Image (tube, rainbow, N blue to C red; front, top):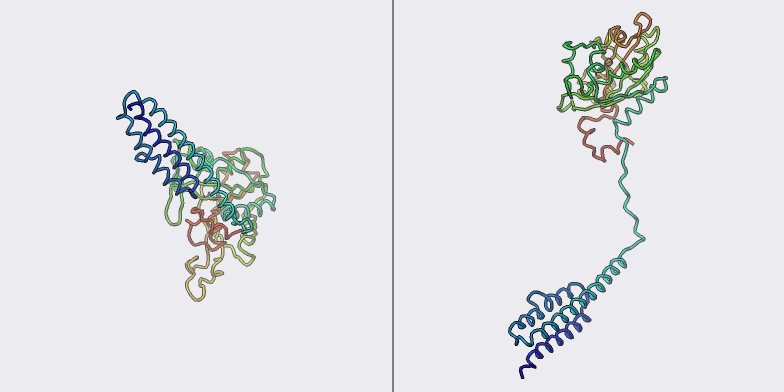
Length: 351
Ligand code: PHE
């Protein structure tokens, strides 16, 4: 009876569906379920095998058998999805049951103030207490503020002292904070007492130089400002930062924007100026007992002229120091690179 030919196939499909339904009830976890899926619904699974017989059926029977096969396929897929959702929910619940809310939490990592920031703030606070005002200015400067107004006209040999990073012929990354002297004096009339922290840039990179570092500039202009004021101010400052026993030494030097100029040394913070630590040569001062910490001098009359101050009436002093250098000496940091690696373990030591 040819009309009954599709029926074996259809009953095969129906018993497959029943078997799959039973199996799903017994499955206990997702791995088991996946195994069932492959066996029944996989590309070479039992449903696929049955369906592969469809083309060999009598063409008259094919539509009916195909329809049932597709229905069974959809039904089994839906059963699978439902069971999968159940098992996933159960596994998530189990995970939640394993979770112990009474365990102490992990302590989050906290940031810390960078030693360069700490030292900058300390320096600024000391001068604020002396009545100085904090001023800031652009890191991208022009030639006028960085060089020309500081008594370094184009072609001046002193420009070679600083290896400059140029943006254009006349725009550059400031090589020192001294342009803040000019900007401050152009903005106001004397008396001026300003302290200017900031990043500076030079074409320099080796073990003891980085292309960017931090400076603090100081400027005092008034009637009757003398070199004695400079010395007194810097001694006060140094003893607050490095301790009251620290001694200060001025060495003659040269800067185009100060006259006379000096470099300031302090007694070595490592060996107290003796040159020796536990009988061995002090590596910080190389046994000289002194370390250089800043450059300074009396404001050159040419600088006053470029900002329109009367150099017959006013005198002033200026100084500039490297913040990383002060931080290294203050905290005994031996390697400049530590400041730039941002290792949290390093930074957290200074809070
Ligand atoms: N600007 C100088 C430098 O960067 C330091 C300095 C500042 C010297 C002010 C004298 C006066 O080296």
